[in-house]
Image (cartoon, rainbow, N blue to C red):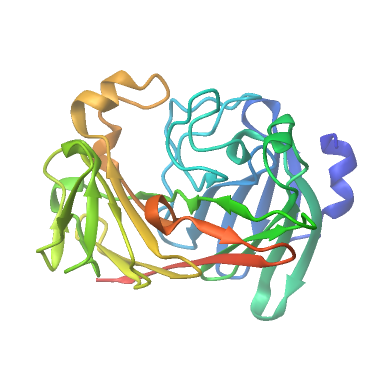
Length: 296
């Protein structure tokens, strides 16, 4: 759909649709308590901000906004695989596809809900048949639901999924992440060595790339720099990923600023590695994440 065709989904005072960065169609949501920006490209939530607060989500100033390229920041949708794959795009094909906006609606308490559908891609031919829907609900919290259904009559569907959320922080040097003590994780920086988290509060002092396994618990980001606590609540998820590229990797990424690692942390929710999912024909999975913030 063109931007003009999408305007039928607008809700006066609540939902506006226009050309955003790179002339990609962008949805701007306004509620009684917050604002959000969502691109059809990747069904990508690029910004969420409570009134009177800094943005909850981080998006790189160097991010590319162009067809076929993922947006660096916000909440990329990772599906149907996590990480690199020979012959395929890193983190799957969902995050660079043009999703279809199906519905926008006002909800009680002054919020807005939007529903998107994955349109399919040539890579689908390599997998059993499936459908994918994404529901974004904006109130004083940001609620995200990724719904995958195996529509094949006779084949199992195996996949990984993740909502790869980038958060804005004041200064990574004073940030801590809580809720993962005693959880086993794969340390990708240390050659995927399996370890157990010993710390109540995880601090970032260098490159961090960890896949925490078999955990359904919420995670908290404590950010003294911005004076807030971010709560990452989830369901339908057995993995939590924590990532910060630090100095050297930041300099290697063309769509990420050299010093932007100081102002972001990724705490991602999904089902990856040994937590990947297998659905029988006709079965569905729902990955739901609710993001909220409060003062420290």
